[in-house]
Length: 286
Image (cartoon, rainbow, N blue to C red; front, side, top):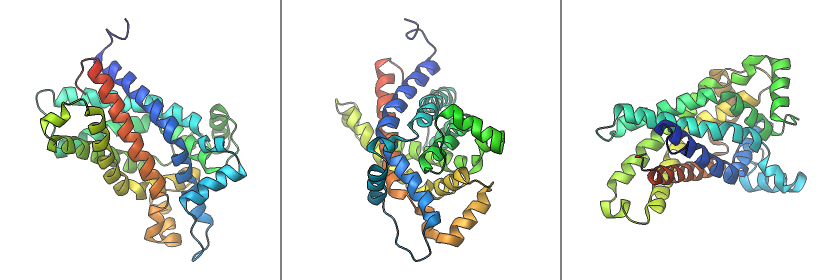
């Protein structure tokens, strides 16, 4: 009963949080493999054999165990469950405020998605840093509170907000590009398709197309962000980008692109599909 009379923005938050829970649990292994690939490249000698996604996957299972693929899922949950909720509630509020009477055009969709993601990204940054460190395998944190305490005692509070510019350069454009392609792709479809019983499948398909485009464009920022957040020395965004380019060339900025593209594409597509279905069941326009 409380939920039924809740503010629409709160309902959007709850729908987003539920969609984030499902997608995080399913696709956490891909995120771990992506992070390991990006950290391993720093230990590969120039001209040395490149390590692939499947090799990293099998190595984690063989040397640790299959459940290690979900290492870092605790900070992922702490980041994604409220983070996706904040994103969708901000997105819903902005859309209701600025575009209640008409649909946003392509440029406005970019700003809408980027603005909502920037708010969520800043709020959840400490958990993003902790998640990257858990997944890297370089830190022996036993719990999220233990990680926070260790980082605060050894590096100061500033460490919890490391990589903020790189994170925003990755997340805000990703969401802006995603929302643009997602909304524009749906507009191209005939009304009989978007109003049929196959709507969840249509939404998921549009989400996959949008996710691929957004993932490729923002991959370099993701590599820079990961390098900053797992580094035991303080690196700036420009400094980290120069280091990657010097050591690995342009190709270094696309390390881990395949698992990240798979994860971000499938995760975003699932999150939006679940969110839109839940909102539709409540009679709210997403």
